[in-house]
Image 1 (cartoon, helix red, strand yellow):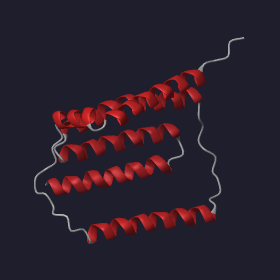
Image 2 (spheres, one colour):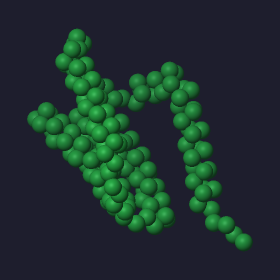
Image 3 (cartoon, helix red, strand yellow):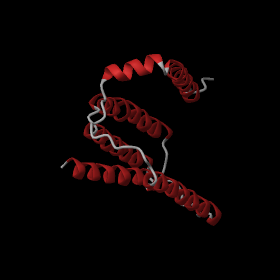
Length: 162
């Protein structure tokens, strides 16, 4: 049953992710992004990483998507005008996707790593220990980056009072 659920949620994640890109309406794209995040959190639950699944839903689907929708509504974005697809760009993109797919397939078929029968552990103790010992500098850099982004959004959205 777990394998069937994995394939269902993986397919839904890929489908909703594709609809984020292919949709012309920005609000609908944001809603498909919410569905993508929820399906990804279901995949975390299947891996027994319950904390990561909860954080995925609370932080991304709860806070970040609300911010995206607020910015979309604030900017009053209309449906994107249909543009002509450049053949060179489409060909380069297709070649890149095929090359990445080949590398992925080759690494899976020629891998000598043993498959672990035990499920991944997603507890907060291991995550916190790694985050605040081995990854302290990237964590702090990310927090400063988010602070700079927040100040930038505030300054860009500030109206000029004259």
